[in-house]
Image 1: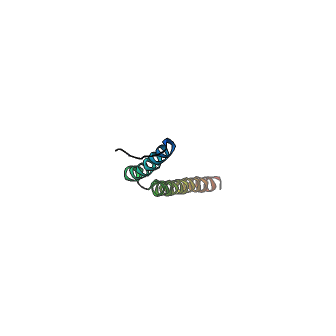
Image 2: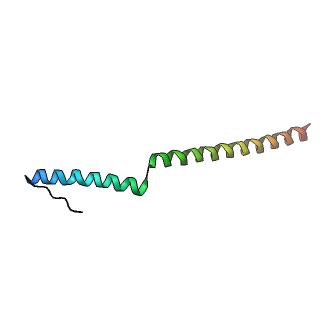
Image 3: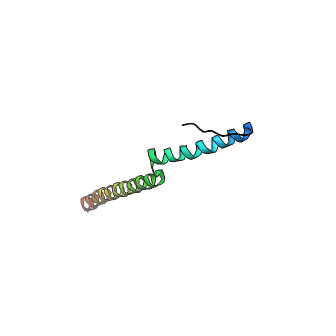
Length: 73
């Protein structure tokens, strides 16, 4: 991959960096895809797992509380 630009050295550098930025953005999308969508999906899965864990914990405490209640009476 070669970029050919002519003119003032600062213009050449600026143009090459601009062209490189475009190529890097394209490569990034090809390699990693939409990372925000992937992050959102993983956060949703984590939220569901934590909610299920909380429900299991709540049910376990409810069972223990019920056992203690009926044991004391």
